[in-house]
Amino acid sequence: MDIDGVMVPANSWRRPEILDDGFPAFGPKATEALQKIISSTGAGIVLTTSHKSRYTPKEWRGIFKKRGISVNSIKRLPENTLQLNRRDELVKWFNTNPFHDNFIIIDDDKSLNELPQFLKNRLLLTSGSVGLTEYQAEEALRLIERESHELA
Image 1 (cartoon, rainbow, N blue to C red):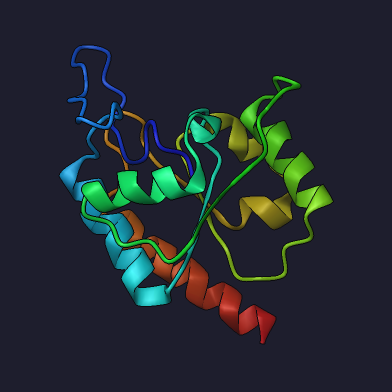
Image 2: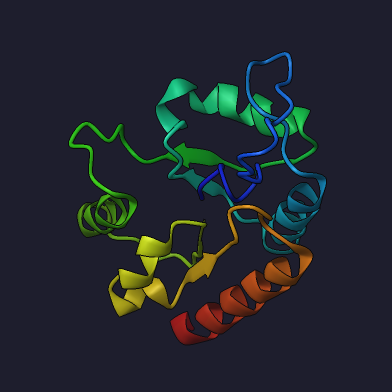
């Protein structure tokens, strides 16, 4: 999951509110939508955001908690030392970390439309200026349900 453009709307005309932990506040609608996905599925989070290495998983857990989201687990992709674009970073990670669980990718990066079909089928692309919405939470739940039937 990405943060900018998913949990924090990326609007160039308005700076996001920074909370006392030094990280931007999440949009209230995105917060509700993500909590719905987590509460309905028990999902954990794998962070793909460019901010992923700025904080430890424990600190990330605190960031989410402070913003009203109870997370079951938080992991993160390794630091992007090769400066890969998001698409290539995800493909590399999935190729080196066989992932057999049900998952979705939530991001606003349009380059992810070029993901291999196996990953693109699990992509929930948000509008960067809006972030994650209630409608997309419902779509995510449908994707997860579809994938769980295919894995069974």
